[in-house]
Every structure is written in structure tokens, then in C-alpha cells.
Image (cartoon, rainbow over all chains, first blue to last red; front, side, top):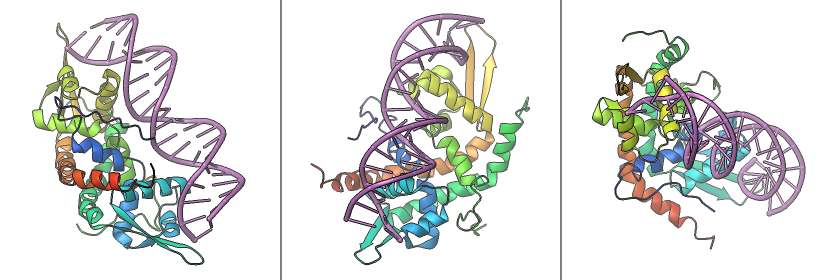
Length: 127
Length: 127
DNA sequence: CCGCATCCAGTATGATACTG
DNA sequence: CAGTATCATACTGGATGCGG
């Protein structure tokens, strides 16, 4: 059973802000990486995705794909063949999200060195 | 630059992957909301932040601010007065990140209804 | 080949009480 | 006012084995 932690209250627009709703979805460990990979490669099979993100386990890849599929970000095509084949790709909704997470990734790529430096040597007395 | 150096396919560098590094930071439950609030209000005191995000606990607000401060996203100014006063604001680095999370927020606001509808409609097999 | 179920550990989050 | 400390709990994520 789903336990919704999002409280719907009218006195607070922050609590029910879409930011929390959406961020809860791809704020997890793998959703963004899956979306980026699908965005780069188009249609991918389950195994291809797993190879593209070796650190992900089957369980998490499945869970991530289910989540994204439930939100309409990713579409899932099952082919009743032998051997079975399942292909994933971004929906149009997912592709509208892609530029944003790419922008975020780009920012991360640009500023990661600075962040790591800040985190390691927190010797800045004044800025 | 348009070249995508963030591809995570064959060249697997999870440890150095900026996406994972940065996403681990503000992929938590509150960092984004804190950044948005600071971005909207400029300088804010601890209590003001807590009032602006009522669902957050003191502990999590403190932890979130410490994390953001360690990364150089947020600056913290302590005034040795009575009563004590501590003020927070985004650093310049934090402000460069702000547009990206705002873009993300905007996407979330635009498509949340669709996502919620997708999420609700996909679960009709379970009753 | 694809995916689920179960068990298990680490961590993120939260409530409460206490301190300077 | 602005935290810190402690405990309790929920959830995430990983390992493994089973099923279609």
C-alpha cells in the first residue's frame, strides 16, 4: 500500500508544490541516469540498460522503470517472443523533461570540481 | 558546449560521474526547497526558513543547510548577539544552480497534473 | 531474457528533549 | 533563537533465489 507523505494543505503552497511531487520521483538514485541513457540511445532493452549502468541491480532497474512508466515518462513494449524481449524508451513527456535534467547534468559537470574542493577544503574564511 | 561528455555508457565512471555526485546532494528531500526559498527571499534566518517549510524538522533543516554550506551553495552568517541570529543566503555558486532547479520546478508545475493522472490511471488492475 | 519475492543492512527522516 | 543529542522508524538499495 502506498503511503503518501505529501500533505495536502491549503495554508501552505510549498507543501503541495509540484516540486516535491516530481522531485520525489526522480530524486532517487537511478531515475535520472536511466532517463539520460534512454535519451541518448532511444530504444533500449532491459539488458542494455543494465549494461549501461552496471552499478544498478536488477531490482532497482525494474523499480526505476516501473516508476517512470507509471508517471508516463517511459514507455514499455513487451514482445511475446522467445526469448522474451522488452524495450523501453522515453515518452514525449519524458523527452520534455530531458533538457532540464541535461541542463542540471551540465551544471553538475561544470561545477563538480568546485563543489568537491569546497567540501574537502572548507578553509574559506571570507568570500 | 553541446558535446555530451556525460554519457554513462561504456565509459563507466560512477565515482567521477557528476550527475551522481551532485544529485546525491540535492536529490534529498529538502535541499531543493531550501534553495528555492533562499532564492526567492534572499537572506533568511533559521526560523524563517523553518516557517517557510513547515513540514521540515529542525534536524533536517540543520542537516540540509550544513550540506549545502559544505558544498558552497549556501553561506551561513552567525551574529554573536542576544538573542542569537544566524542568517543564510545563496552563494554565487548557489545562484548559478537556481535557474536549473527553477526550470525543473516549472516543468514539474506544468506536467504534474499529467503525471498524477498517469499514475492514477495505471493502477486499475489492483482493486 | 525479463522480472518478481524475500530477506537484510545502511541510511534518511522524524519526534522529542536538552543546551548555549 | 538556533541548534545538538538520542532514540525510533520507514524507506532505499543490494544479494540471492525463483518463476514466466
